[in-house]
Length: 368
Image 1 (cartoon, rainbow, N blue to C red):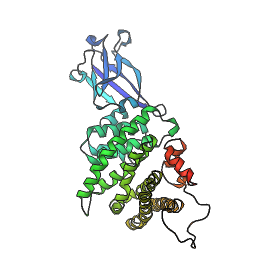
Image 2: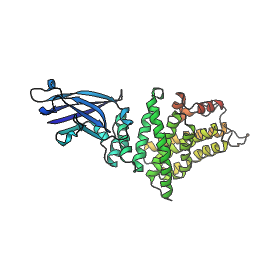
Image 3: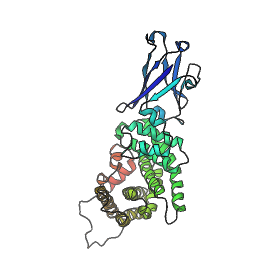
Image 4: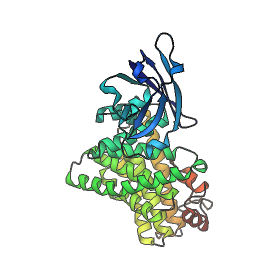
């Protein structure tokens, strides 16, 4: 007897589909059931009904669909196939699990995670598979700082890339969970960076900054302003390390801007001034760290960095956080803080009605 269970994903509906077949059906198994367990919970149960056995001994297994978010709530993604009595079917039956859903759940090495989930040129194209694989990696490699944090970043991006008006309570709950884990992990990340002294591991810098960035935006989705401020505060501290993680350049300046905006909304003017100023001054080490002949995307990234730094300057002026010579024009009369000119999800978060404290503060000073 051979059992094959195939997996597929419907990205539009965020559904997982399991189907399959049995070859050379064991007569003793007819009339029983087999179940696909994920994390110890039944994801699909297939009936081996007598009337389904064909003359050649083959039996199709009717498709079963489940919502993909159901697996993201589990704390274990181990896959098993059991019989009616809960015994592992693989002990006495050949079982084959096929399809990318099982590939995503079965990632067993950091290298497999990076290839299929993290690296843009080789990863799954399905956002659902990226979520499943990232969560599987977070659970499977809790002691691997790079994999765990990269996995959390992938999970956060899957939420941030969706229209915020369509987010459901389960999505916002998952965002809260990521924020909770990120608040712990950035402490570890900055400790690892400090341990590296004058030459920290670039991966520790990159993934600490990346996680602080996306988790900060997720905190704003749930109006968790204090947590967002804690996460975005990382960026000003890590600006000097941009030379070790050039890929983090834009996130560092965006984080300084967002932290400055939060501090200003809190009425903490000195802290706001310091964050905006750091974001502006970050242009110098950011440009110095880049190889302008590396590729065209380096130039594009620097353009986005400059746009964010420009908003830091405008904020310093419009919020009256630094003295400027009134006889020397420093800004066009009509220029205001405009988060729509920033790369990233901040403007969309505010447009969707999240983080109303920030939206009101911007409106009060003539910005948006």
